[in-house]
Image (cartoon, rainbow, N blue to C red):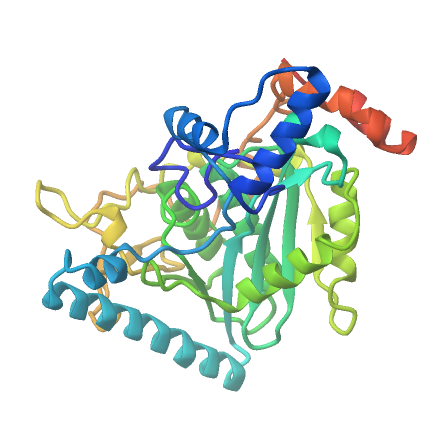
Length: 382
């Protein structure tokens, strides 16, 4: 599977989260070679081959801070490190202040959001699964800081991918659940992942929602490497829950998510391909880059985006800056007359999985209860 956090910048592939070390992997490899009567290579050779094939063991998603590591090794100057620490502190303080505002004022909603690490299906303790590719499942989670309400949008790769319009649809739908009489402002905190939270499709979707509902929506991005949020605790809870039972189909994940917090159950929406809309069809803004010339600020430097019901996007490069209008020409058709019906579906049919993966899943039916076989039989594939 690809990296969770860095899939946009690396082609390295990772083994599914079945092994915790190369020693464990090598033991299973030796057992398989013995069964098949093949000559096994040493652990050292196995690691070398992994490197040559651009492979690695799976590591749970984390937010690596290159700047902190670089400063510790002397590759980042004290000045650059001080700027980084200042941005980190301001971002965290911003979230604390907004949380307090939301608790005191019911007209303001503040949430954190993130995509959980890739989940695989089936996920069971059987040697047969080691050598087969499995179905990838995705859980996009939002956490309301004032009420602690949690919403999960869950889907698998046979119903949708990880394009910007998938996340735009989830975020837009979540915001619609928050809309109630008197709401004036909705604030969303997230990491700065480009394909997920900081792109023109998501921005046009949020501008559309702000105009449609007559509210202000604000996106705020935490400093890279220091994006710990309340929503992370939800994912930790779920990962502990998932480890306790076998997973035979995506619906098993959905049921476990519903059971994870009995006192205040998580709200789960199990998505099909018909849920996703193609928000890239909205052309309010062609780009959200806050500069025009070479050397001007780029999208990754944005810290705050503000979507006004007037149809204007404003931005900040630092939390303590004043808001400025995005220096981009806006489509003059922007207005409150838009409705969901004009936004086309992202998929006309379920996206097919690879034929090789479909064949592997068919073979895995040997270790899956017969009640789940029909699900795998009907997966669309090349």
